[in-house]
Image (cartoon, rainbow, N blue to C red; front, side, top):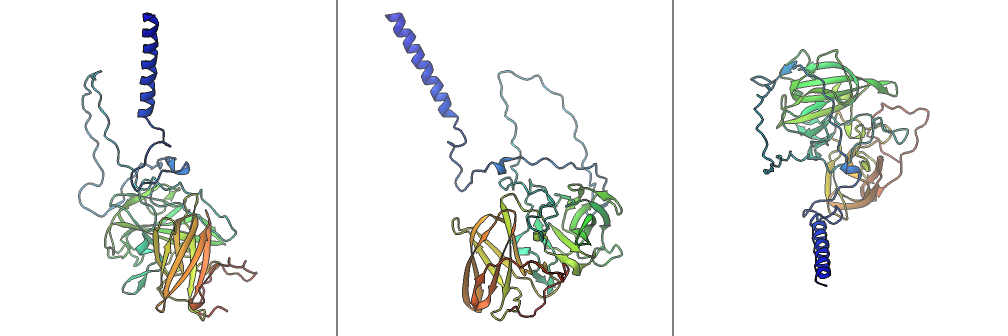
Amino acid sequence: MNARRKSLLSLLLLAALLASCQRGTPTPEQATPVSGATLPTAASTRTPAAPNFPTATSVLFSGGGNPTQQPGTALDTPVPDPLRFVFPTPARAPISAWRPPLYPTPWAPTLYDHFFFSRPIAADEVNWPQGDYRYGGVFWEDVVHSGVDIPAPTGTPTLAAGPGKVILAGYGAMLGNNDPQDPYGLAVVIRHDFGYQGQALFTLYGHLSQVDVAKGQHVETGDLLGLVGETGRVTGPHLHFEVRLGENQYGATRNPELWISPPIGWGVLAGRILTTDGYIVNSQNLVVINPTTGQRWYSRSYGLGYANSDPYYRENITIGDLPAGVYDLYVLYNGEDIEGQVEVFAGMVSTFTMRGYRGFSYETPAAPGADFDPFATPTLTPTP
């Protein structure tokens, strides 16, 4: 009997020990997230492939010193101690790892969409436009912002948004003649291998600290163009990104948030803010609120000047990178709160019209007729 009791007690102790080990390592479903954190979905846990950067030769460099980092010196490897465990220093967590990967380009869920470009900043950094510096804003000397600003530290790799030929690499994107006083600073312009509706497409990458391509060079999507900086007319380091349609001119830009691919499961909101009589309202603030989480997004309708609407959507305000769902809309129009609610659909452009005191409506733009001009810009004539 004593032997049987000892055997039984041993089995019970072993079972208890195994159970305590299992409780010590919770599954992802059992784990408690950090306060304020959101558990990633299956799509967001995919690790994006590292971009295949070519071996870059610095063409232009804005700062002093040597732009090329010198390789380190190898150290003798000591004999490891089998009883001593050393945990590696964790790498810096990706800033935007919680965002899903992008839809593959080209992504065109309707006949009139044109998500042709990938992000010019890799997914392990902030690679979405800064809300305070969207397309069409007016920031200094009444000059309309002709692109979007992506906040990134100096030295962040800048990548080609699509395949094409480099037609400018250096100063002079606005003033020409390789002028170091150019507002764009060091810049790269690509004429892409594809166009839209028979017209050429260009992308511009401004305020770089270093350019790693040469004029006439062909690049592929994701190739290294240079490094983020703060050359030209800036208030801090960031990447200025433009999409130009038809010709490589400041006045030929379109809103990049309607051309760069959104994250999978997310969408874009494009709207028209008009007076009650149907005239376009410039520089009108819009607040978009997630009614469940309370998260807010801000935008402002295009300023008067070189801001071009898409001829199909005829928008004068856009907010990209919105998770699919229902949102509350708020506009303070002539001292009166105008409220609405819109649903953003995954991978698509969702639309609204706010017409003064008449409030919000959500009709999909009508299919264009035979006289549709993809390069026309809506005028200030009233809408019936």
